[in-house]
Length: 494
Image (cartoon, rainbow, N blue to C red; front, side, top):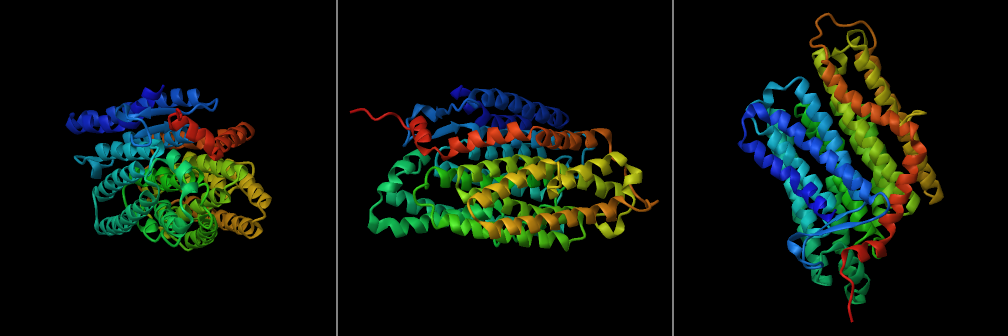
């Protein structure tokens, strides 16, 4: 099974290289086939880790802590599946109505490159290769942002790149500090050696930990490090925008969760307090920004900032129930957000404008589109009995259990404002009299790609109890540092 871990890690890169040399006519079906193969492999791996097993692949047969390791546990596999499922839905959407701006571009190569970076980040067992995975993500993301670029898109791409280059430089600074004090970058080895750092070096180690917190917060788009996102995500064609909105920023949340529950579990204070403050600010300011917007995908982009705040809130609790709540929220939110970006793109095409003030009556033009957007919008806002309600309920329960009453109050208020902003889209774009000059009607396969994601969201609501049980078991595994160390490091022989 450990070989399957390597296949999943390297598979997107092999597929990207193959797509780069094959005929353009074959790239679209082959990309769909490659992602479908990844989903099948990840489901097989998911069945293997469901009982709590951890599979480790030693790259080049080098033993940790000096060799590179790929580690697959319940958390890593669910992140892999979320990336592949959202990627498959996006490719289906593109196949239904290919965007002419992406013709004769390396779109599919970069798309698979993005999945390669994501899979690497979710499977790596050390800080340096997490840095490498982030760089692969950055290269692929900037390439995607630059495809069919207009002035607005190029400016957004430059902002995105500059921020991430600064974050990458800080990442190296943090890695250097941690390596200088501990002599290792392996997560499991850090869990062993960080508590043994001399008291005289404790303050410097905290500096390194806080630098890494800033880097991961920037990758996750937590305020005040999210200024680039509302411009970057609505700018590119809809498939790229949906992939970014669905999964790209989650890699930062994953890094916060993995690194601060494993490598720095013993020294995460005061990082946890800072993360909680950033989460509260992001929840509130993000949704206030969304309320003020008049473009659908720009409004949804501000929502990303707010919803990442919810995720960070659960992670910042660093309790089993807090992490479990964050995982439930992560699964729900990734699926719903990707669906909303696809549906928002269809609404813009059907209405012939990005601006809500120029849209009207789309429900008459496409009742299916209107119905799917209505369900996904209510789920994002957390209206009962949707998956959003379930995820916010368990998050509030975990927050109250940890006595963070102010953060729970902010989360509740942000939920009301989220509902208001989603109703703003609905009443302006879908309600009213249809505009006779409106443009395209959504194609069935485009609606089918979004319907696939919305149906997952509905299923999550119906399976709330087993979903939470899974999340709770995963949270126990994530918080059990000794089990992770035992799985990754070779046994000590006397």
